[in-house]
Length: 157
Picture 1 (tube, rainbow, N blue to C red):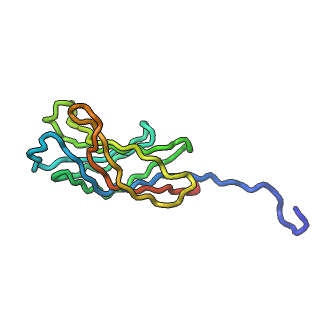
Picture 2 (picture 1 turned 30 degrees about the vertical axis):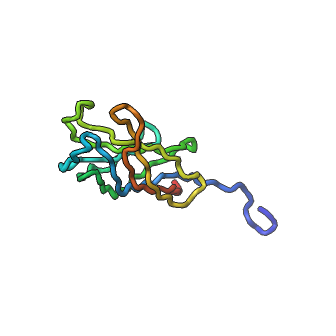
């Protein structure tokens, strides 16, 4: 104890955990199956998000018409390491049994790789994630976009 009667000692650090909160709003994709006759049939889409390949998070499947998708869903990813630098986003079309390229009917419409917010940030970042993919040539092309926001949430464990 010091002269004022206060206890001296080391400050105890409480463990803090960090989550990445990702909001997926809406988006648009180009489906090049037949550009001259856009499909009037609905498509079924979902978004997958991950930091590493072991922990993949996904939205619910939504029914979309003419390439416009409304997700309006929040995904929360635990960040266990400061080593993570990017978030990976993938838009998938499902129930495509006419597509010969896949055996389960799922087709990747486009992908994005986005840098994570700085670890010392407490701001929310909103952006349009440009989705890229391969066309039939195969060349890398823009396939559409998703409107996304994300922020880091810290809490005491």
